[in-house]
Length: 480
Image 1 (cartoon, one colour):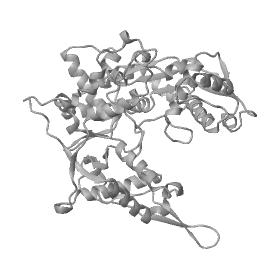
Image 2 (cartoon, rainbow, N blue to C red):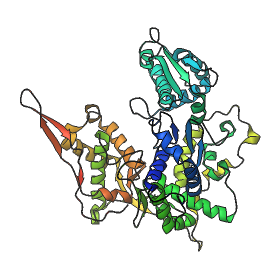
Image 3 (cartoon, helix red, strand yellow):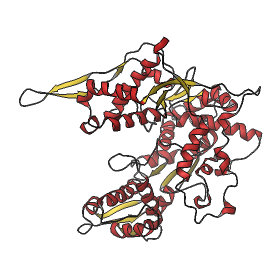
């Protein structure tokens, strides 16, 4: 029987699971973020949450008078959860740099700061970084800086006392904004488990057991593998058995995993031949909804249906099968891109991890089985970039009247964003020259859509609207 939520009565279990989902969805909770009721909801269950999240997932919950901060254990580098701008677009490198420099600058100010003064402080630091800079005379730089400040404002680290950041971004000579600084929230926003300037590689952040001070030993290793398996299912759209080493595979197949996650989150664990997934039909926990509304999500759904149909072809029309990049290869590519931007000055070599580079050479996913055999290579159907462009052209021709005009007129950008979404949902793996269809994409086999029309006032005309109720007509039992 699951030991998760042992002290929670059946009558209160739903409320407890709501608090679990809330803190997992929003690792920082304040009096105003993500809403005014969230902090009270989480604090009511703080003791139980602290116990269960550490025991089940290896996550540490840190609470103060006005904040709740969840410290996650990271097993991989995930590009699917970016900070978002005011317009809902992912932060670029410039905005991330401004955010970090703003945090540093705020630490040198008192209880209040003017936006122009803060911008000058960040600009003084940014000019010392090659290729960055912050010129307040340039509108793009001001917009990027205000996006970073707004991100902190939404979480309560800054509170607008007077003026307008938008007006300042439009004309800093005529407008200003004044902010109150909340030190407690500011510290909670940036709460690393390591001293970052002592790291020589981003992979050092993935040493979750060392970072959180977990114990060593064989029993502890088994416990950590069980936590890692739960994290893999919780934090990803699907955990494929083919990606797991022998010990992790055993934990993924264990009945206790489903029992623990279902009792913890209130969601349903679904097992299929290829893997296991935690199903969130309500969207109460997921950070990305799929299928979803909007041009990119709808184009991605229809593209997934066409890829899935192509996978079913046999004979001379069958798609070529290629191996997917291993976990070690994916980690290497992402880590090296990040490490290339790390500053070399100021590192204290004797405090850095001595064997961080080994993360590039060895991966837990490459462990042979108990009999010493190397794991069998898994191959997936491959579709080329030209094939994908052709299918998107067909989709745009048929349904483009309901697509956003800017994306309809830029098919390469639409295709790139649609493929990024499919990759984030573990439906495909992007590779050189195209994409590999992963088993989960079979869920969207047979998807159909229609373009709605409505009559508007005035002269007779019709405006095409993409149907929000895109349906899956397949009667087959989809794989995960």
